[in-house]
Image (cartoon, rainbow over all chains, first blue to last red):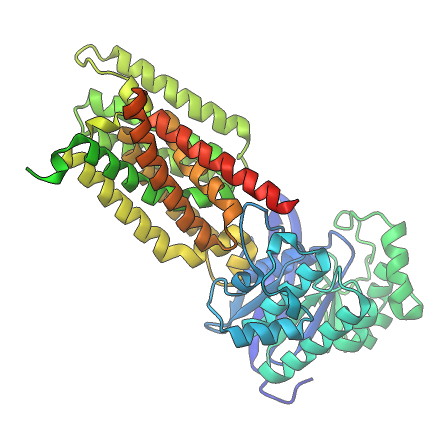
Length: 260
Length: 265
């Protein structure tokens, strides 16, 4: 972990979120400190995206409280974003929304995201991978205190994805920001994060990557062996995804207890 | 004698005033796919006209209030997930029908409903002109003030939330601007054609623009040209002014769409 200030950027205290009468998140408590990279893993429909949307304020908690440091800047890379043809928007203009940024900063951020040649292109004409790189550049540009990434590297090729995580690491060092990301790439989770939270409507388990990987709750969700990398694949293709009804982590699940 | 004494000059100035506000607002209507929303708000204005006639209210005031109520109602319904074409269609046409029936039941007034349905731009008074330009100025300042936030919400509401912008508040701003434009445009193009002044110049500007700002400015230019040419043709051929203006705007749209298609070949 960072040896810089250990100030809390964000604290969730027993936050529950309901949508259309369905409980999506239940009693989520978590704290993010400056300079910390935390990854959320969990099966489809486990509330990962909902958690990020609650943090940006798009979802209101039905109970519990959320506190963050005053005037923090939040960088957010959504899972999916569609820009319609009817809206003429160059990459350059998109990066200046809502706050104007200088040409040199734009150039630098696009270079860093491997999208330097896209500056004058229309957003609606970018390919999926190019679009994702531009979103990353935008997240880098806002110099956030808290960076939220919702499967930010999906659609990127392997070098692009690796370069992205190098940028994230650099950003953490330069800005001392807290980073919360949702990822399906378990090898990334294992190498890049300080802490992993295993989510399935509630916090199944959390802790350092190695601890979580060996925790029974995690293995119940993702299977065991091959450090979880293959297990994730198996999980996604052989289980039903309606986990809120039948918790696969079973009775012994340590709801929200941090592993020591 | 002043230059405003000429009814033709007043008509041109009123039309340009409407376009000044309607064209940039229309860009948001196009980007956010709110055309039906615009229809519902505009058609409700005829209910406002009936209300004003019944209670001897100024037409403009009645139309503004009813349009605003309608805009707020529709936007709160769409927020709750009711944004079906059907519901908007029901509201748009039922308010129009109830408004028309109500006006016909008012035995003490004899009005020419056609002038509210299709506008009566050649009968614009100095007072009307002042109202139009005041509304255009307030609508433009509103859009100018919120431009960056409105655009961010239009791109993606989650990105807006993350930047500390409330999509609900921006939707409210758009509803207010829409009600203002509807109220000021009744006299110029009439309730049935207001949506065309919103979306046709904006759509005509799209193939010629690469940023949102260029599209808004071009839409204003196209709208002003349509008003000047449309009034000129309506004088030459003795056709109704509002519809002629819309026809000219549509010609601009077709020309620009063809240009866009050719460029993409």
